[in-house]
Amino acid sequence: MQFPTYTIFLTVVLALVSTAILAPIWIRMLKSRGIGQSIRVDGPEGHLLKEGTPTMGGVLIIVTSIFAFWLMSPLGALSLIVIVGAASTGLLGLIDDTSKVLKERSLGLQGRYKMIILLIISFALGLMAVNMADLSTNISVPLTNLSLKLGVFTSTFEIAGRAIAFPWIYLIFLFLLVAGTSNAVNLTDGLDGLAAGTVTIIAITYAGIAFRQNHLDIAVFAAAIAGACIGFLWYNSYPADIFMGDTGALGLGGAIAALAIVTKTELLLIIIGGIYVLEAMSVIIQVLVFKFTGKRVFKMAPIHHHFEMQGWSETKVMIRFWIITGVFAGAGFAIYFISVLRDTS
Image (cartoon, rainbow, N blue to C red):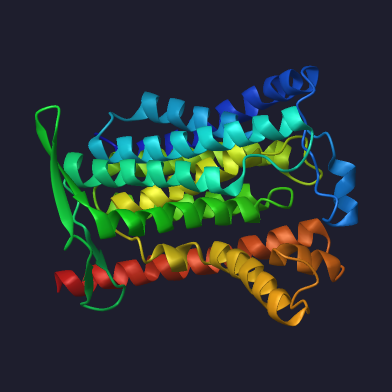
């Protein structure tokens, strides 16, 4: 790649413009087929007006991201892992969205089936990372010299004449990472523009990390995701003309988890994606406290709905959560850069 900075910038623009041009066509097609979002009856009352808004916009984001990457960068082992992570979790989300549309209710696949499929996806990504890309099963603890050695229990099987290593603890860790991230992004996708904006910021952060590691193909794909999300925001900003649906939320969450895997920043994702940690923890806290005490900590969970119930407008919640995401992502990138400087000194 002769001009990497220019290529990454051009990828953002290409994905952005492609998404912005194709979105109206996709919206019209969804409307013509009556494919719209079903809204939870126990959600904020104002959200009932969004019933029937076209969904599955995540198909557009993922497809244009892959298309822009295909035009701008050769495929490498690491970028293949990220693409497989995004496409497979996005396909799971598409199945979930399709189930919701067919059943005309806000509940799709049962949770246990989602988890089984996410387990298979996570194991596949882990096996690709270890056996195809030769990534280490050690997990670095940010700002320390500590490293979690997760390859201690490894089995080797011969499949199609090739020895395949199964590092079981590492694979289980990746399941927690992929399932946690994809579901946390899905929880965050409850306000117009919220998930797309936060993913944009985090994808740009990972583009910077991958660029610093000289993994230019990963940087290009992260840039493509950011550009596609920005283009999607034109139609997803309040009041939204289209939702990304589980296709987008699970697919983008899977992509973020895969970016953390291939850049070996798995634990740093807790900081970079801190907004998703807050959203997920608010749900866990709400459920546990209510179960044991019968009381609610928040007016509604996830926490973005709590602020809505406090009287904040959707736009105010969205922009402030974007700012918080920027702070988390900036802090995560700073920690990464400090760790790199310390290791090279």
